[in-house]
Image 1 (cartoon, rainbow, N blue to C red):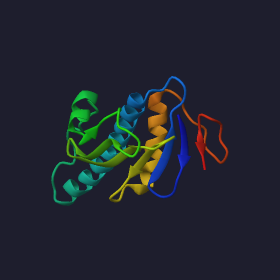
Image 2: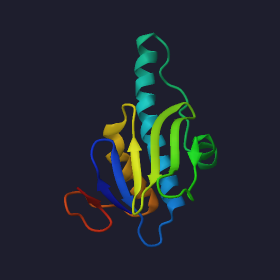
Image 3: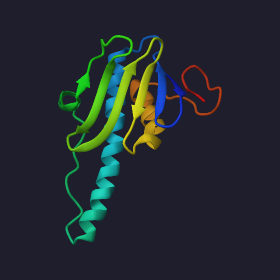
Image 4: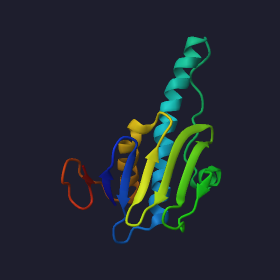
Amino acid sequence: MKIIKRGRGRRYILPEEGESTEDILKAVARASFEIAESEDAERNRKIFSSIGLDPSGSSSSWDEEHMLREARIFNPNALVGETLLHMDHVACVRCKTTVKRGRKYLHLYLYSGREEEVGMVAELANHYVGRRGSAGPGASARGIVQ
């Protein structure tokens, strides 16, 4: 997938040959959840430690079927302008992620304080789709374009 930087909190994704919208959405959902989960776990460890509770505990892990059921919207067949994926809180993790279908690109948005993580989410999703993009301006078709 080709990732194009489009300002704070958003990226455009261009699926490449052989990549389905559904696979890209699943990869974005997983990447967003895992990054948000690690952030929440660190915050919780600090809070628990500060009030004298044991900060260790079980961390939830990605279960695709369960998580996609918890997403508010998961519709790989949405039309142009419609929402393909919307994740607010999934398994008590603050995901705050939306993907909409554009005419040419999928539009990835992170919001409510997660805007700075959109690049990490896009890169991890790219990895999960099966192709790692190269960083930097003018990157190849499988990378990021600034």
